[in-house]
Image (cartoon, rainbow, N blue to C red; front, side):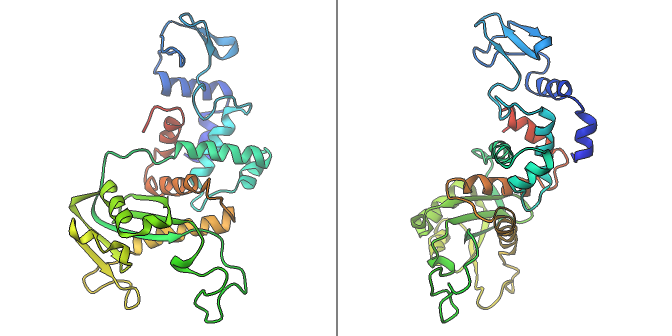
Length: 298
């Protein structure tokens, strides 16, 4: 749903509240505190009163919109803007678009990212799976590359860097899963455990580069490697170009839009990019995000 459609469908606060109530309660309000359906409407205050626990509440209780002082239409517009920004949207830009300050824009974006969290997945990745690891952070400053030009200075490139490590897996033509990992989990034991948790090892083939950390995977599932020093696509068609393309999108967003992301919040940003990528062809992604924002969708 684009901005024009949001304006047309939700022109007032009442329209936004009515939509959230329909999605959350389907016509039968439930108290979010005691789960009772003995509820009376308070139309003048856009709230409800629970006759069981004697508490008043609104539809936003327990959602990412709870305690907000902003019109819900601005929240709906923020969801549409974040979903439409392929390479991410900075809090300053979001603030300018919605006419709020940057701190409010940052909080809204972080709340929306909560709705985009990668939940526990019952469905495992299957088919041809590409797996790779990368390191996310700002570009090295001029002069930090070693004299050999291979990253031997203050900020070495590759696995010698101090940047946070991220491991990703992607179904060929399908969904991606990515997460921040510690450097010790880049070893064979940690990477094998990640594969077992996310991939259907009985009906999949894994393709990686020749990093030694993947050496143990062949013992429990089909595993092919691509030597990037020789080619990027092997003679048999093996490649990791899909996950590399996702890394390019993620890094361009981090460097170009956000400039710097703390390790504390990096998982939320990775979830955002993964969610947007996984629903890139979903025409109902706005509705799904609203459902997740109020806790009725996984």
